[in-house]
Structures are given as C-alpha cells and as structure tokens.
Image (cartoon, rainbow, N blue to C red; front, side, top):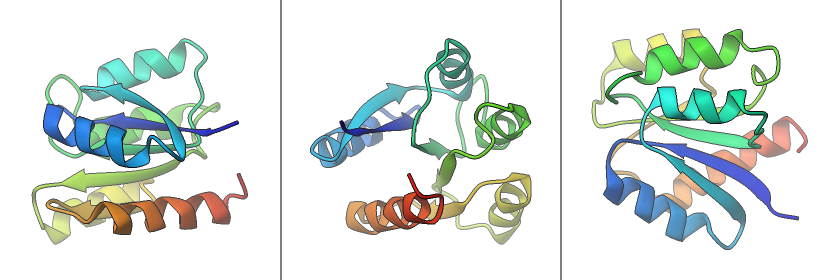
Length: 125
C-alpha cells in the first residue's frame, strides 16, 4: 500500500509537477489552499506527509501550520513548507510553528523527495 502525500499549493503547475513526480511512490492528494486541506483532514483523511505552500489564498502556510499542529490527530504528520521567498524570518516562523522543513522555490523534486523520506524515516512510517 502506497503512503499518502498531501500537496497544498495554489499554483496548478506546482501541484501538477509534484503529483507527477511522486505518483510512483505515493498516493498524491492535491488541494489548492490551507482551508481545503484542513477540511479534507477533518473528514478523517490522514496523510503520511504534507508539502504546503507558504503563500496561499484563504489560509496561508503559517495559519495552516497552526491549525495542523493544534489537531490531536495530525500534529505529528511530517510537514514541509515550500516558498518563493528566501526569507530567514519566514523560515524561522514556520519552523517555530512546527514545520519540519522549509524549501525555497524553485526546488529540485529529488531534494524534496529526500527530505520527505528523511522525515518519514525519522517518524518511522
């Protein structure tokens, strides 16, 4: 059975790239903002890892992290934030809120894959 990867990004091209790249190893679920992702999670769905954008409409990355980490069911899910901004302040904020990692766009999908694998290995999924 494949592990489940939740991708949350408002850019259709990023969702498409990640869905294509990870399709062989994961069941990839795509959502376009943090609110859609939280609604999906609250329906009882449980991903093994999440990749979420920092800048999204409706619910941005930091607010998504806050909601996710406040949930007793999903607080331990591996979470990587993607951002178009290489801002130390943004990185620190996300890490303080509970993100496991922060990667700047454009990114190498292989690097993202290794970061996800390291998180999954660490939490022993």
